[in-house]
Image 1 (cartoon, rainbow, N blue to C red):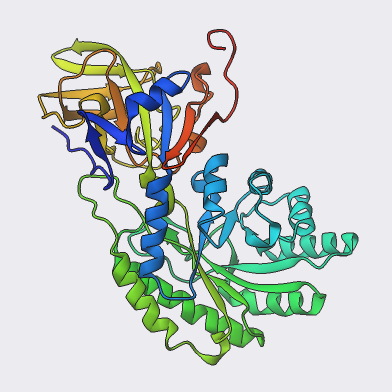
Image 2: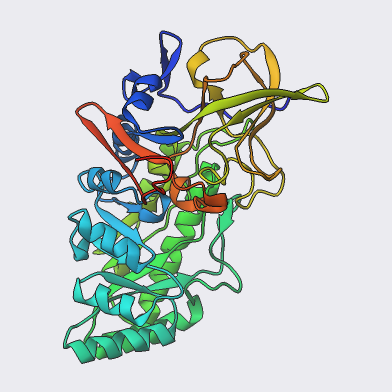
Length: 427
């Protein structure tokens, strides 16, 4: 058998059925128009952010990276829990404004911003994390045309990366940010333009579980910020240290030790150079805040045996959970945490593969893993589905359409479908 990833803490069974938000998932399924659906636990999001704040040094702001999960009810929940939001498109800006978040709480990174996106950001007072000198020139020209002073920061391409990260965002030639040695000259241009200087965005990598590597990278980011501020000849108002904190997806993964990260960062904050004495720092996190709060629920439609192997065929699949299928940047496919939700506390009885409804051999949710015996009608839960799930998967593939989504928890139940499905079969 191939091992399954670890089920995140905070989940339990009620009468043998997986519970989310204090209720068995069967009750949430009854409230939804159909399966598949995503369930996001508001309680788990709140507890994750509270634990992170307790571990980090005083004065460190927490920003939410909207690309991890832009579900509108979740954004409204996050607006009362975090200090700022980081977006990567004009569409995400519209989503944030629709959630009641003001422009000055938002920063905007991304290497291909259109002029219309730059203009919208400037009009709403969003901080632009500039990715090139050309983007800076366009932003300044738009600000002059509008008679507005843009709020400008620089995304720095550092000369280091985050060791052990699943996705490296810095070091060497990158489409992201401005090479460190060119940053001071651009800072001076911004200062002389009349724009509002907002500081640096230094993001070296993501999805790392090694606390020591994360702390060392944060130390390098602080050293780089101090050096570039000194060379620029100006104090640094703000510095986004990036994120990097990952979550366990696979059997060999262990949670990152946030206590160690917090202690090491506190030590660095206690010895900041004068040039950073008035700097406000933040950590930008997406999947770490919401990834483990989400569960994807799909129903078994068929149970079949082929050449002695058991396949459980569901009404979901990679069109909603591309990452769990192993087709979202994974070189060797490994199993996410997956369980039979309606037999959550039952013992393992058989080896089976759980596959989706799509007509492609890529559509696997779990491969040759151990499960309780499951039958047609049972529900399957794919965990770690709160980030890069619904919005990062090809929902339109083969005409399947998006899944229903629900934010659930104590005192809160909100739901919607991101885009309407065809009316041929469902009202």
